[in-house]
Length: 190
Length: 176
Image 1 (cartoon, rainbow over the protein chains, first blue to last red):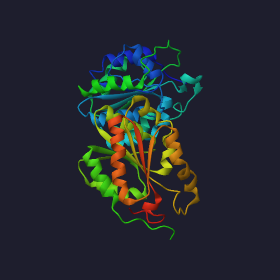
Image 2 (image 1 turned 180 degrees about the vertical axis):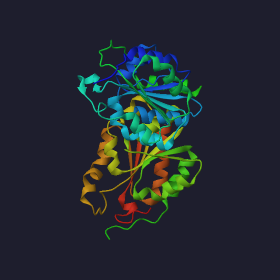
Image 3 (image 1 turned 30 degrees about the horizontal axis):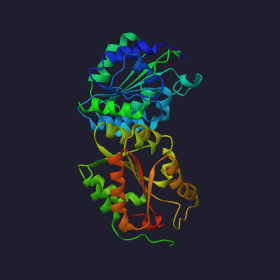
Image 4 (image 1 turned 90 degrees about the vertical axis):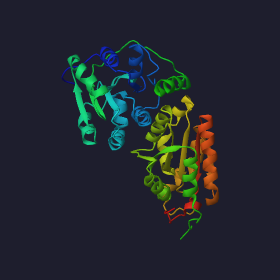
């Protein structure tokens, strides 16, 4: 590991505070806990499973609700599992979809085993498959530019934030998938 | 030639049943047996075709579309069902509809033995994961079976799969 590493919780909080009404599809585990820790919302589709599905699910929401901005917030492990999904998004090219990968280059939930993103340039992959804008985030000073890209620039857009490998306090949201989905459906219908 | 395709145009029946249920998106990794249906979808400006890199993505995309208020389905070959196992849990815990149209390989007169293990396992795999499974052996019955499965899925927030037998598609003639 090299370079600067951000703290995930302050980063996610700052990004969500700037989301300007965007719907958020977090990946399972830590990104979901991060969203809940930042102050819960029915705009967040909390996930407790289905690794690899965050981006395809966010794509579906974005296609169904083109007038709403949608952000997929996931980790590097899930993004690598579903790396082909980037091509699917690139081909559909929804202008209202953005992706933010929280990249600690490890499987943080399962014992901090090393992952693949340390040797894969995800921004380059995203650019190559048709994302309009990409951004590598290594400093909190970039958050304003990041939020501008994620929530206001025509997409699809893609960012990787290099984050530290930390053990954050567990902040567990609703677990019942039907309740999560119902709340999100109502929020998405506005 | 081990098995000739049945001649009834089931693809048009499915297409009509889709229209009647406002199914506006088809997520797919194609199969020869889906050629005609996918051509009709591609030719219709009101239908969006989402080409996948692996079939499980279709579970995410269709669930996301439902969360956004739209009806969608997945169309795939039976060998793709195995790629969906873990993903099938998500719509079930959300009580979201999950409608799948599966054209079977490795079944009736299959010439490729590599297709047989997955084809054999598909009905039980889906059943084990809690999916309502509707196998069809006659081309004339595909449309009504698809319509019934779609209604089960969308009215009940359930998972339903229509398995179109290789007997309908033909072991070599994959054109329908």
